[in-house]
Length: 190
Image (cartoon, rainbow, N blue to C red):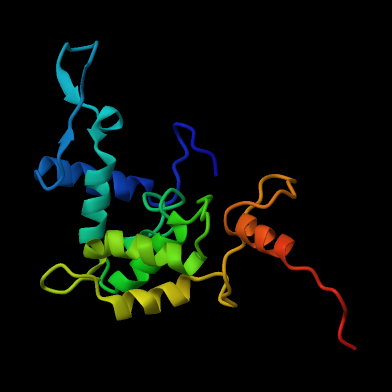
């Protein structure tokens, strides 16, 4: 169905009426628009030109139990499970997802994914109830969340980068190379 002046999407009139009523009842803050009728010179409200802030509409919809569809998707596909306003909100789930998202494109330089996630969770723990009453991180909980988020659970030491295409040793590798030069194998054991 098109969206021309005569064709409206299903539910359009009902939603428009509900929003207009909420603004008139001062439940929603909005700006009414008025136009002048050229026939009689009188001002009349024009709902098509009225303005309501999107965040106000979202709050109003949430208060009505609506947390999906147009105002929440696609810009907030995670809106339901990351919103502290949702009845099934879990701070630990939100922390795990936000930590995972924070690692996108992150240069982990010498850290495993788990170590990087733990660092992020410790820095942001207060936002997700991952601290005790004194503000100290709940290390056991943080470690468990980091295990879930870790995309390289096989573990092992992180590889030390040697530079793009370089065979030259760096850091600890230089020390090991110097030690190797001092020791030579004179005979192989069979």
